[in-house]
Image 1 (cartoon, rainbow, N blue to C red):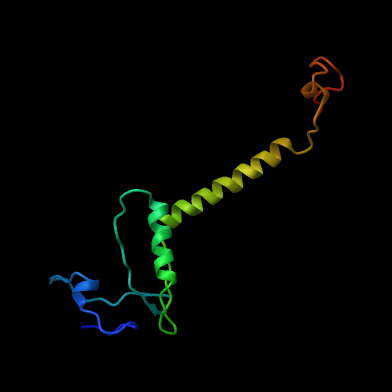
Image 2: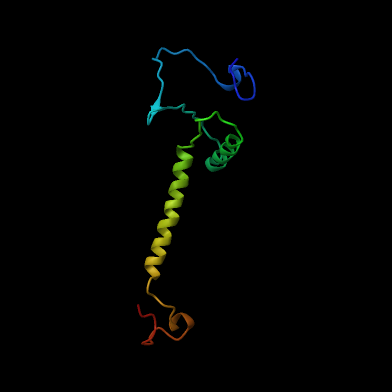
Length: 117
């Protein structure tokens, strides 16, 4: 049994423990201990990540403890955000200084006033 904020829980319900011949290691990042939890996803990566974040958000963690999601789902979200940002920059750059012109309204492409930068 292990202690939890919800009372004692059998270890077999929260972990699969297998003996190994490797050395025991306590992982640290920036001077703080951390535990890495990994899992494989079937289906939508973002949907599973959002569901996991929603479930974890409801947990009451001990003081000083926090949860940080990283990995493929966060990398995908960051890449989508960057793509949207760069698309916006490209759109602004392409259309910067251009005015709607008469040729768009049907004045004709050979007009001197049409589509000047």
